Image: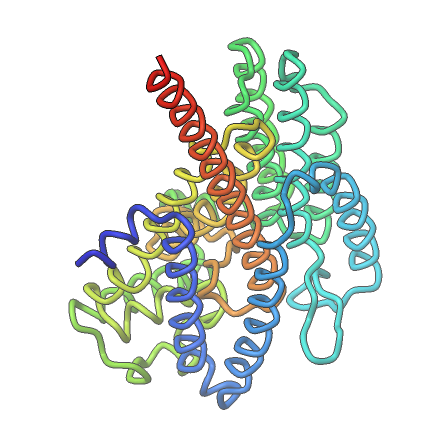
Length: 383
């Protein structure tokens, strides 16, 4: 019982265990979802890249996050450069150029842009608040974030572009924009979304179909199949490997719609316990780490890393259940994708680094307080 309660109190253990559970069940689900197409090969790749990711997570967790405040700028330059390269030389799949073929797996540079957006915004907000200044929406930092999003949008990949911009905007909002800038922000974001949808007929059609205004069998098929697959799982599920959706009934069953396959084979109860609860646990501890962090940069970085993973999780599950239009957002740790998995685990390592520093500072503070109490007690005994 104590070990279970510890999951809610020890932020490090809670984050690590929730991510470990999600990664294991993700690999198991990918094996089943992709078995018909790859015979288990994709699951093996995911496991190997997951081990690489856990190694990167361990290294990141040992880095003093105070030293990473300027890394966001470098990461942004790298992300923009790679996204430009992939736009013109990347491998084209389904009409989009988003990947660089590295042989063993396809590398997706736009995943780096997600982390760059978090670090860049956290650095700007941290420095500004530390110096007593005010957060300005019109800034070089927001310009760089919009540039990354714009380049990714040209691939085209509106889902990832939206994440890159949304996570930066969210941190600016939480950093303390004034009411006038918030109104401006809401207006600009709304107008940008409308423009991006209106100038791409297939995006507009997805939204119209989702709203029930138009009918399109190709678009409706994927969304309706996903809901049918989830419903067919019931409370107990069809059993691991027993689902039928993998037999070409559900497109992208091992990537964007992997959550539907899990619901089909594991059922409602185990989906809540093995997928939803770990994400809730991760979010709980991520926000606690942010709350316990005293310096502004660390607080915003912890918030950003937590929102990046949790926000994608919520968006994907709502998309698969039909509550959002199909937007191409993967489910962290569950959907197939080596680059996404490695970057997400690096984010987890960043959270653990912040937690480790928080624990170290708390212990130092406790020692100082104890030493002061001992000195006062000694002085009183002499009197």
